Length: 141
Image (cartoon, rainbow, N blue to C red; front, side):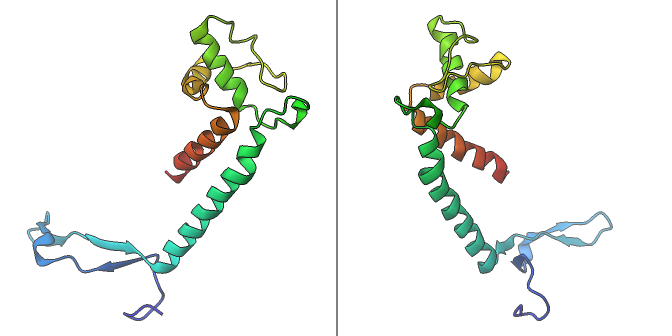
């Protein structure tokens, strides 16, 4: 139960200080809510989710980006096609003819490859890990 009674809300808010009032349109005063914080239950779930995503990124996603020279079918990501095509724009190769370790070629508009080109200097397993965490940040909002 919430200390003030009733159901626990997602955010626990404290009353703003007296100086946190602004004039309302009707001549009265309107309070601004400055003291909202996430309750501890939501914070714990966020930490658990963050820990799980971090473990997943380093254990599974990173492994998928490793280029197995003897068995290229084990390379389980297409991100390296995009980064290779992006690098091709800058070193004079034809971006639509480069391939990743699995033999896949680039088929998409050039802008995406150009945006991913900065990842190319990293080892392939680092490319997919960085992209995974950037994607999580975008999903976060």
